[in-house]
Image (tube, rainbow, N blue to C red; front, side, top):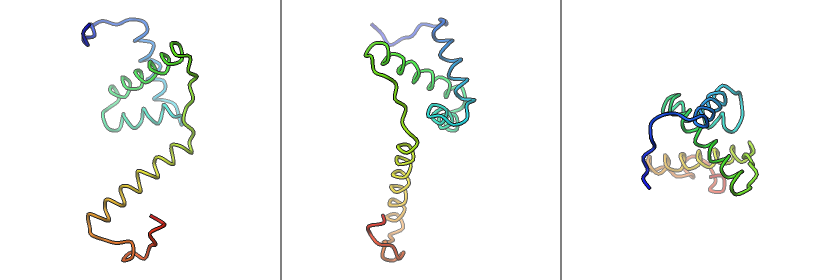
Length: 110
C-alpha cells in the first residue's frame, strides 16, 4: 500500500473542502480560528486543505471509535496562548541577558 493519493475528486473530498471553506467564513469558532491561523501563514488554499483534513479526522473518530467531538473551550485556548506568550518573554529575557530583578518583577509572576 502506498502513500500516493490518486488524482481526481470524489464527493466526500468536495464536501469536506466546501465545508472547510464555509468554516473559514465563520466568525468565532474553534475551527474558524484554526482556519485563520493557517490562512495567515500558508494561504487560503492550504487552510482549506488543512481544515478539511481536520474535519475528516473528527468525523473518522466519531464514526469509527465512537468518540464524541468535544471542541476545546475558549478558556483552554486562551491558557495555551498565555503559556506561549510566557515562553516568548522568557526567551527574550535570556536573549538580552535581563533578569526579572532588573525589571522590577518578582520571579513568581513569570
